[in-house]
Image 1 (cartoon, rainbow, N blue to C red):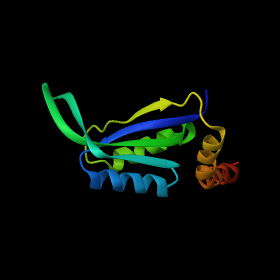
Image 2 (cartoon, helix red, strand yellow):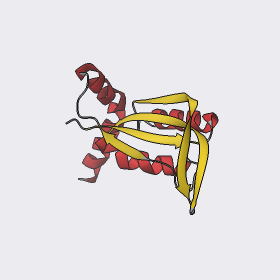
Image 3 (cartoon, rainbow, N blue to C red):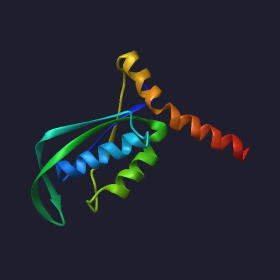
Length: 120
């Protein structure tokens, strides 16, 4: 088992999906976000009714360490009252790719470590 996670997040429009993807990568909360540009059809229960919607799916690669802050940022930026935010563990993967995720998020980790050392 690795410390990596893949978050699944759906958005109501391509524009919103692109905005969220860019914001979380720029904030170094995710190393990479894949945006499924063809809408997915979602069927779900909402307020007692079965609904159907076209949505855009984000596949977000991050680490467990960033997961809570990433979740909060998605909730802050997302237009839905209750956005889909599901994290799946990455059991294994290409060592080079997993290392790349760490490298992509490393500046954030360094800043976090600096803040901890100042508080000590």
